Image (cartoon, rainbow, N blue to C red):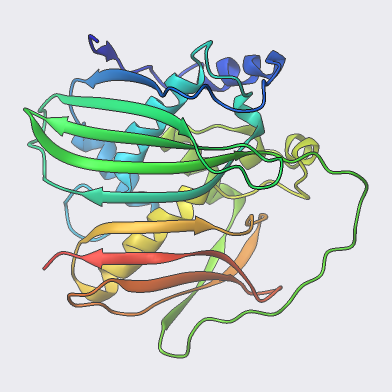
Length: 284
């Protein structure tokens, strides 16, 4: 299968909205959908712009920057007529990223993306996208993303909450995420999904207000860990547990891990509920 140029960012939101006319057939076909893409290279000026979003230190390409490429490959596959679900109806529930090698600036990148059905929980279809990025035959980065189809609500039930907390061993930092942070991230990442930018457009999808991008929180987590440890994050997992409605006050915490994986979490300060949790690895 020959490689195609990776789709450009402009126009993606409109093309995604057009998939609302799809009539889902329940689950994906048993055989994987896959495609190959190519990118001319990483633009370091864009990397610098991305780093400024999080006041990141150093000059390296952050691990989460590769998600911007991986996400475009995922969306390209979602736009394939064989993909049965509407893009706006998908919920990003988990992400797993790892850096394998460092590409040279300007080196062309090859990307292979595939999607397979995952275990169905109840009547909610789930799917896993796998993206592998290579440069000159060397494995550069990998990204595995899990999505589920939004469940239709039958009536309204009062939510019940059980308070959660971060472990006492965590180093913690207070975060504030404003709508302005998310607008800047949307412009830099190309992810202009209206649920992140407009309270009015977020409500039909079940959100009280606009919500932060899950990968904005992960990118900020990586920058915070690297700033405090002085080491590069080379692997991270993210379980997106609850949406972060804007504006938001949160508490980010993590445990230092010199050689072994360390844990981290993001707590909604007002509700004492975890919005995000996972593990990370630092460069040796």
